[in-house]
Figure (cartoon, rainbow, N blue to C red):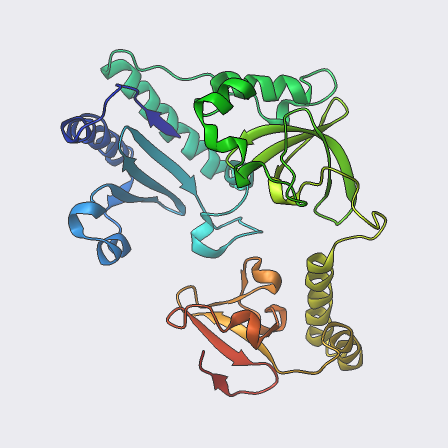
Amino acid sequence: MCILENPGHVDDGYERGFKREVFRRIIQTLNRLGWLVAIPPDKIEQYSASFARQFRYCTKGDLKADLKLCGRSIELEFFQNINAPDRPDNEGRYQYDKEKHMPYLMRMEMLRTRNRIVTYLTNVFDGYRVAERSPGWRDIGPGKMTNMDVIKANYGSDWHFDGNWQAYLEKKPYMRTSHDRKSAEKDLLEPGMRVWWFDSKGRIMTGIAWYHINNMWYVTWGHYGIDNIASFNLYTSLPERPRMKRNDRQRRKKLEELLGDAVTRMDYLRAHQLKQILYPDNEPLYRLFHTGHQLYHRPEFNGYTKDPNYAGKFRRSEVESFNPHENRMELVGDEQEVAV
């Protein structure tokens, strides 16, 4: 949930008034609904007490929310880790599609809180209204919208780029040679250009590129296919050996998961076979333990786990640059802890 004002020029006086009139009223509404609202101590330690006043940590049972003020906008983000299968760390803050994963009663409480705040603000302040939801990728499909319908709708509401490429180049001349439009071969990308890329499973794909923001480009294929790819991952011509899958990271992640399964069920022969496939040179391997989260990094640094069997196994060169104050290297197969 985001509360956004557009007053033109923003000065310190406006920010103080916005905080006094809107931010504090949201806090009062949360308190009336039974939420506990406090300034997060970690923000005080990380920044200062005065700066930390722009943040609030809100709790009601197992449902939590972060409230923060930034210039002309206020954000209220709800989260929980009762059901956060992908990212239970950080109390579920980074779980994908948070609302979908919320237990039913939590979702109802979240909707109730959000609706009460919206109703209060629209009744108290003149000019406040609920913005219409912008079309998203979920709206693409047969009988709904095409990929280009959604892209054009996004251009219509985007202050950064409205779809007029020539006007954009005149407005920002640096984009004529910017790295934001350089492909994997260092060619310059143009909207409407045919491009090739490799998907998340390493398979070759082709489609049409359309500019999005910074170095990110929409790519479309057919009426309903759409993705968002960085310019340096796009090719302006068919890459060599297109039938070869570029899935080294996915392969390593999957094999490490199978290795963890084998160790868990004490199938050490299978575990040794997988280790020889993954690390044939038998060099020392390390687990990386995050001392703040009290969890191990998973393979390819994709999340965290409590189980050391499913922790990622890394070569020293892959982890020695990590912050030693937050991460501890543990030698796999030995109780000895190795300092970073």
